[in-house]
Length: 279
Picture: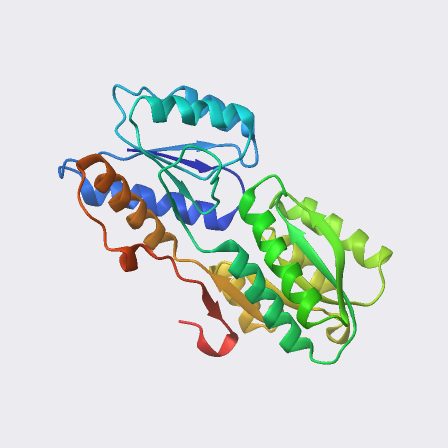
C-alpha cells in the first residue's frame, strides 16, 4: 500500500505521516507493506508526478490527501483502470475515480466552527477573518462553505468577508494576518481552517488581551493544546489521525480482498475540545 501525504509545516500532516509509519511497523510480516511517500503541499503537479511513479504491477492500493486537478484525475483514472483501489484521506475528491473517502465531514466541521464562534461571541457585532492554507484543496473549501452557511443564516450580525491564505506556513500566515488587522476594523472572531497556528499565535501575542478575537481552530496537538490552556484559542475541532490511517488500511484491504467492512468503525468523528475537556 502506498500513502501519499503532503510535506511541509502542517503538524497534522506530520502526525498523519507518523501514524502511517507506525502502522507499517505494526503490520510488518502480516501480508501488508506500507510505503509512505511525501509530496509538496498544495501542489497538484507534484501529486500528479507522485501518482505517475506508482507501479500498478507492484502496488495493491493507494491512499492520498487529494488535490483536485485534471492531471491528478488522469492518473487516478490510470490506477482505476488497472484495478488499484484508491482511498482519499482528510480532503476528498468525489468527482475523481476514488473508491472511498476517509475523514471527517468537512462541511459539518465548518458549520460546527461557525456555531461555536457565534455562541462564544453572543450579541457582539463585527467581522470574522477566515484563515486557510489554500482554497485549492477541497477540505478547506468545504469548511469555508459550511462556515458561511451557518454565519449567514444564524448569526447575521457577524460578517465573514475577510479571507486569508497562508499555505499553512508560519511567516506567510503571520504577515497576512498582521496586514489584515491593520487594514480591517472590528475583527471579533477568527476561524483557522487549516494549519498556520504558529503564525496566528505570533500575532495574538502582540495584541492586548481585550483586542484579541475569539478563535476556533483545527487539530489538537502541542501548539493548539497550549493555546487552549493559555486562553488564546477558545475551541479546537479535531479529527483522529491514527483512526484515519487505520481506517484507510482496513478499507484498502477490504477492497483488495473483497471482505466486508463495519461502517460504524470507519466513521471519523468530529471532536470538539475546550480548555476544560483536554485529554
